[in-house]
Length: 163
Image (cartoon, rainbow, N blue to C red; front, side, top):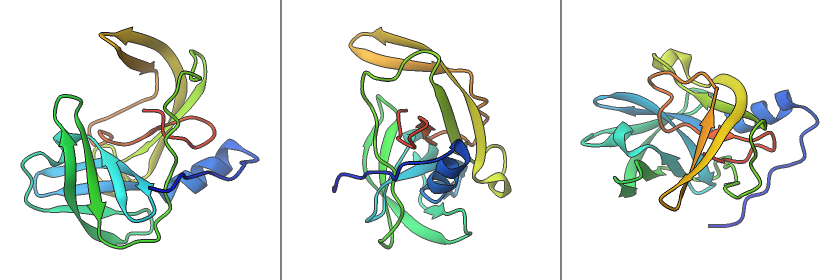
């Protein structure tokens, strides 16, 4: 996987418009969730429970394009899945998972709450807590998250996926 670098953004709105193209709705035979492209060759990160047991998985982009997806690897214990979406040349967002995220930092989520027609809904809040439990770092936020947002990215203001 090539290292992804976002452009410098002049505003939060500009970052959201950029990130929106990398966020997808994950549609399965059991419902839907959210995800984010992390490699231009179509590798997406989501929550495993979104696709668990599904026979059919599709990724829908903000422009309405739907592509088939398949599970590459999953981590049930951490509720993570990597999906391979058919195609290439997709916009991807970098992972910004490090120790620099602090309480009070602004964060954004882009996802699909409640209904597929609500895809690419944006919520903004702050990082309201950061805890280390059993060698795992947990981020707490006051961002509004609803069913269907599962698997979607938590982004910092640089458009990096931090959770």
